[in-house]
Image (cartoon, rainbow, N blue to C red; front, side, top):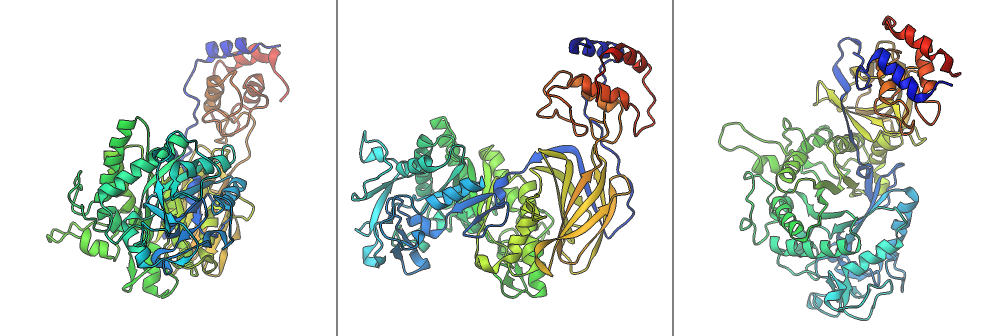
Length: 639
């Protein structure tokens, strides 16, 4: 038998090592001019896409959902010991058992447990809100009068750590319901004890603190919170969480809209804190919170706030009407809605909103008006003040759940979240889950486009359109299937668009399976298959107002074509040399084609290479290959 070590030595001596083994990208053909050009390229590599961005609040469950959040105004006043909560201004300041279906005498944590169990069954993350506004509901006795505002018998005080009140007492899964306290560390301990092994639970530091005085005046008070107050509470409760669950992600800020990110809704100490904004339109509170948490982390020697969380309900208007909601699907509204996702990132796009009218507008006359660029601004502040902090958007909604424009906006937003590296995102059902079929379909164009669980990949690939006002495009690959490329292409216009598509990649793609979301049906629909006759180039007509998911499938692997470029040549030889004798699983970097036969990369792969050298290419046989054939002849195995 031909010994492995001798085989490698002979090959290296005869041929020399010629590179890293990574196949070169195939230059795509020319599909000719179209209305737009969509350009995909893996040449710059890939970046991970977090599965948590496909998350929701409420009961909507698009197939392939990525995270479930327990949050909203109710959860600021949630008492985990009794499952009582308070509605605040949302409904007559009621304290009741709404979160457990008005069932009496439920066990501790019952409002959390079903979602925790569902997330475990789905294999997805859960985001749980930790109250920190100071008090939670003490009973289910309905309306809390102004005269019963906290502190009173209608409320229990929230403390970060049990030891502050009961030194030396352990955390309990059966908490004392008769005292006047609820403890964050005890709540988190209960959650951690009830989650499945390996199940991810994230913790949100309350909900929209800039609105506590507006939404929960009986719980918090009628004077808005200060920067300092929110900062102190954030440090205390994040510390308590990390004491119990050091590996859990803590999502801080949880702000409501631009005003909260800028001034905490005109907090009393706004403009008295440092650091000052980068500009007059800077997100001042975000910057202050990042700085404050970074200082606390330095002092404690651990991360306290893993992600900066925000809520985003676009202020963009169409025909003078804000785009969120389901009414007024006029042409102006439709146009504003399908363009609105650009305000997350596009420096060239200036929406019609109070933000661009009064905050980012250049009144000097120099014409230096700025767009919203939300993610760009947040990322710049993070990079400057607390590098490594993740971005979470635990509430958002672009309206139009009953209209194709809502499906387009939803799909576009998910594409942006994936490309821009957002860590977590959860859609909020303003219009009600039953009234948002196109939103669900927008999700499923990424998470279940064929109805069989096929989804956009977990690796983002560079994709660009020649006309961002008319279209957008996103592309991905999967770590578990490198021979597929999934593209989501969006037509923002009311007319079909002829797209000229080119793909620069190591693999040669031969077919594109097509799935579409149009105004005709609020579900992804299979729309046939395209034959890619040119080299990684083709034309595709995007329907008017549509989302198209294209699954490109590479040609079947040629034996010996380890790189997957359709040719058996030096690229495959280099891969073999670079990985000789290593484990075949996981596949080595660049091994995108013919899979290894056995548990290690060895003579089986060598024989396939030798037996098919030159297939698919006119590259001549290397001068020393015949010598290698002779030296290896005795050791060749059956393929």
